[in-house]
Image (tube, rainbow, N blue to C red; front, side):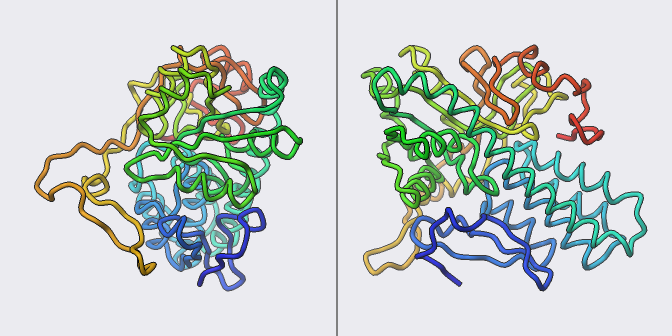
Length: 372
């Protein structure tokens, strides 16, 4: 099923169906076609996360919650097995473990026969909270962007990977302040990094186009030049995990942009909800970095002249390659972390100031241990 003419602003990235399944936007088909995929079983949800039909830390967490709900619909006794299967899909995004811990806490004490209904309600609550948190991130980020816009009467912003609606249930994280600025009438232009090898910048360009936000896609290696030339007012990115000291794991290539931004005197912001902050992880060196299959680098995905999707081999199959999915940007290079509670310095004190109720390894409001 496709709905190419449907603007992304009118749909969520994930939604339950009346007949007990879950529908997602299959992001592996974008930007060439907007296709809905149906998740009928736990295995479908796990595959969607692992194969990046869904991606972005907040959306991974929400999909995992719905994956538990699908499993409980089929077998209320299989809670531990379902959580283990979903936890094994991707290691870096802490939202995955956070959502699974919350589902476990909600369901463990219930009899097997009552778990399905409770699981659907809890997954829906997580999804709703994610959308609201991202909306608030937009508001708080806009407060940081307004002074920058006032200097020149416009904003030129740079982003990396995709941290928009497609990476969450709605609004997004790094793109939420951009959308808020655009909706406030500020003249906005976005420099969109292509983000190889998965080319997730194409997803950002696609959804910005849906909203009518001016954007320019550029090769990753041009970021330093754009920053040095003064053509960017700020860099704003999302995060897959934020350590307790403010170090941030995000899509590989983020660290290089942070270095270039610091050299150019350009603010570098990270936008993420509470569920992305891992207070049990002391620093960036403790964050597990996912290494993905080499063929993501060896093959280039696209469509041919007839419009058919396919892959072109750019690197020989026997060539040794390295394909880390993420890198870690040290806190010293980050000017502010923007959350649903406001913006803070990328420090332990700054993060704790926003979340004073959070214990050393508690999840900050749900009373659960946060798993990595």
